[in-house]
Image (cartoon, rainbow, N blue to C red; front, side):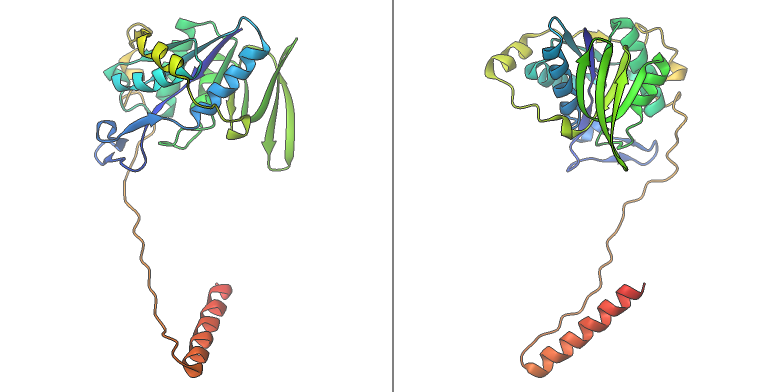
Length: 265
């Protein structure tokens, strides 16, 4: 079985900045890390690989040249190979344009029996790319998967919904997005890190995928960020100093009155 894991390098949320003109993340200004939720996707892929001997895991990522760091981390954790889709034409892609690029990359480097993604990326927080890729490639789809197992007919997955748990059977090829309930990935070994450092990661461009630049990147993104603003916290409060029983009674009365007003809203 050929498995593909879609991973993304995201800005560290402690140092992220936004371009207020284009409405996109200024990625060069931020420390970049592997999207934490994509580690669970790799964990799921390795579980399937163990259950289906002879399987291989390929990690694919779209991003700048620095995204190679995230791919090497995934290789160190157990992926068999990796591909970086890197092209200035892809910059500024929204979820739709990103899905167009990733779907084309999966077709070029595939075919794959199973594509696995994280629940969402921490920079966009939409969870849309996985389902959009599945739609482009006409794949069976299951989201928010907590457990996955392989059977003779394909996959069996368990997903948590508002009303409880659902168990689905999926025919391959398929795409699933997984939650952190799938399990932790663990730490890479020293040998894994050394091997990942030596690996060559091929770079694929939009031209290699046969994509029209007008259909990807900022130009090909139907989503438009109209306005960016930063929330402000306006906190008002009073301090009451308790020095005797009388001031204590006054403070309790004020607090009780405030709680009653809040409850009435």
